[in-house]
Image (cartoon, rainbow, N blue to C red; front, top):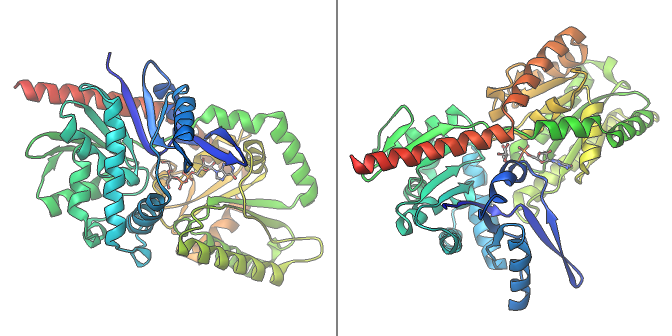
Length: 472
Ligand code: GDG
C-alpha cells in the first residue's frame, strides 16, 4: 500500500529539555490539526525538526523512538544549521523578500550553502521513508528545493508543495541571487499550492519571465513534466474555536476581564512579533483615533498580544523596542487613574484565555503589511457565537480575498485605519450580525479539514494525470 509523507521544517510536536528530562509537547497549530488525520493514518509519517539539539546518540535514539510511536520522524539539525539555514536564509533572506521587505533581506553565500545542505538532509530523511509510488506533501518556504531533490531520486513519487506565505511579484524574486535554483526546486512537484490566486499568478509570471515556461489554466509545462498550480485558501478548525469560546473556562475568564476593565469597550490585536504584521502602524492609528475622537478616551482600550518570535534575528529585536516605546508614549499621553488606553502583553496565552479575549473584543484589528493568509482573522470570526463584533482586515492579508464582509483597509493608511476603528465602534448591531453571519458561513464551510481534502484530492488527480501522460 502506498504511503503519504508530510514534510515541514518543524514537526507537530516540540521536544523540550528541562534539566535532565525531555518533554514532548504536541503543537496546537492549524497545520498540525489539519494534517493530524493524515499522518497518523496507516503507515503514514510526518518528517521534520523536533526543535531540540540532541546531545548524544543515545538521546537521538530515544527521541526517534518516542516520536515514531506517534508517526513522526525527526530530522536533527545542528546549532550552526539553525543559525544559517533557519535564522539565516529562511528568515533573513526568503521571509523579508517574499513579504516585500527587501530592505531587511540579507544575501549571504554561507546561508545559501546551509539552505542547500539542509534541504538535502531533509531529502535523505524522506528517502529513507518513501517508496517509489508514495505521496509526499512538502510545506513552506524553508524547503523550496526539496521537491526537485526528491524528484531526482524518486521520479515516480507524487509530490505536492504548499506555500504558507505570499508569493511576491516576480520583480522581488528577481532580486534573489539564487532565483533560478529556487524556482527549479519547486518545479519538482506535481502540484504547487498557494493561499490565493494572486500568489499563484505571481509564481506563474516569475516562471514565465525567468525560466521561459508557459502555462495555461494553472497547468505548467516543463521540458519533462506537467506541473499543476492552484489556490487553496487554508482554513481553521472552526468547531475547536467555536467550542473553546463557548467553554465554561472562557466564560469565566471573560467575566474576570470585564470586571477588571470596568466594562471598557475592547479592540483586540493578536500576532507573533513580526515586522510583516503592521503592529507599529496599528498603534499609531489607535493614537490618531484618540486624538481625532476624544469621546473614545476613557471608553475604549486596545488589548494587544504580541507573541515572542525569532528574537535572534536583529530586526525583531529592534521592532520589539519600537513597540515598547510606542505603547509607553501613547499610554503616558492618554492614561487616567481609572483607564489604560493600551493593555500590552508580550507573551502567549493558553487557548481558553485567547478564546476569552476573542469573546470580549468588539473589534479585531488584523492589519498586516503582508500576510500569506492570517488565521487570527478566521479564529475571531469562529469565536463570535452571538455574531456581534467587527473585523478590520488588511487588504494585503490572504484572508481578505475570502472575508470581504470585514472592513477592508490599507494598513499603511494610518488615517483610514483610525477611521475604520471609529466606524467599527459605531456600527449598528444589525450590520455587525449580517457581516459576521456571512463570514461565519464561509469560515465554517472552508475549514482546515476541507483544505486538506481539497489539496490531497487534487494531488491524486495530478498523479493520474502524470500516469496518463506517461502512457500516451
Ligand atoms: C503563517 C503565515 C498563514 C497567536 N497568539 C497566540 C496564539 N496564536 C496563534 C493564533 C494562530 C497562529 O498563532 C498564528 O497564525 P497566523 O496565520 O496568524 O500567522 P503565522 O504564524 O505568521 O503563520 C500566515 C499561516 O502560516 C498558515 O498558513 O496564515 O499568513 O505567515 O492560530 O491563534 N495561540 C495561543 N495563544 C496565543 O497567545 N494559544
